[in-house]
Image (tube, rainbow, N blue to C red; front, side):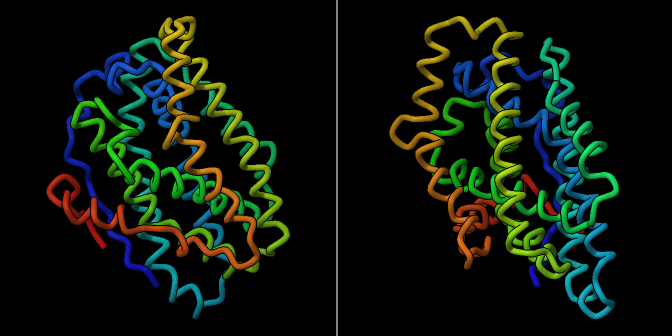
Length: 273
């Protein structure tokens, strides 16, 4: 069992978030802002899934994993709160959150009433995306180059905690009796929705910011996604790992997240264990 620490983030969330905050790069800024729009509703789905999953366990198994699950829920609740504040700045700037509505509609239409294992499978699959993205963000300075310290620290803190709790939903899915067949099937479903929703929200952000027509926006976007050390070139091989029969999230590299949390303890002090 992993001990997960719930922390509070001590960065400035009052100052408005400007256009092009990520080093003046319109595409990278719109991309991160799109991700942030998904977090409050998405994190709530994960929290609900974990609570439902605990309800499927026998008393002995539940007692063993419940402290870790409670830590997971506490971390995700903190992420939800922080990104709600973040998103309020984006909306005041004129951006429109379409992604959240799609998450809520799918939850109502596709997940309500389903077996808790379906919720857990979706959560475990999405957590794989956040874990491999966290590895990318924390591996070098390039993903957040030029960002103000407070925003760089926010994204790195979120990434470090996603790396820290990357195994919890997967382990609970298995303990609740989730099958390998449905684990892979749900991963394909999550991959489709996650990637298309992220692309749509990023494009929408660029449209509302008035930067989507600039050639420099797309030059920077191609470099960010496909250039040397680019996002897709780095994470697609790790994406495939989830489909292996012997996959477990612990096979990923959590050392960068552990090091960040250790070296920035003053920015994210513990609330509770």
